[in-house]
Image 1 (cartoon, rainbow, N blue to C red):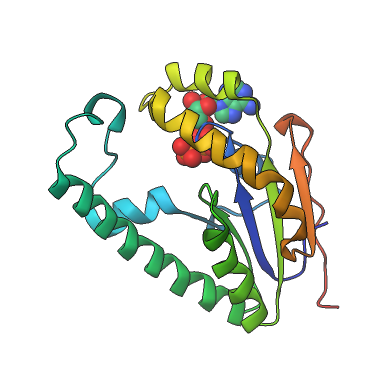
Image 2 (image 1 turned 45 degrees about the horizontal axis):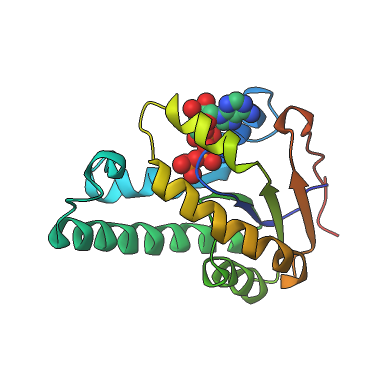
Length: 188
Ligand code: ATP
């Protein structure tokens, strides 16, 4: 059951299927596309940079390119946060599509929800490392083996802490085909 208003955090490494799940929910009319905020989309919005292909360039990524990416990400996240805050003030639901692998990435949204007196829920995409790696090979813009493995290690470590972080509900999802959402019709 989704809260009437609030933040729904997607959590999971690259290729765990966060964007695919959200698209499926939009396509089946369960979620509005305007209810989704994605870090990838906001990076493009602020910088016109579609995607930096780390998999081929990881070894020779220059410091300036890396710094540029960090600056783009910082601007993207700041704009995302402003949008989420506006939606919280209007009592809307917002799905946040990013990996949220590190505690600080999640904490900022838990605090944001508290500040605006709305709920915060987490949807954890729990997918095995082999599946993540095999999906990466078939992806148009692969994230690269090294990055996926590193993300998976962080995810494995963090998984046990997520439940205790203070969400109104946490769902661990292993099969995205099974996911259906129910919406609260009124403000409790
Ligand atoms: P990122 O964090 O890098 O944006 P993500 O978790 O949002 O990744 P998606 O963009 O949804 O992942 O999917 C990445 C790749 O994995 C895509 O090629 C997609 O088709 C494939 N994929 C996602 N979910 C599934 C699934 N349930 N079954 C098979 N392939 C999937």
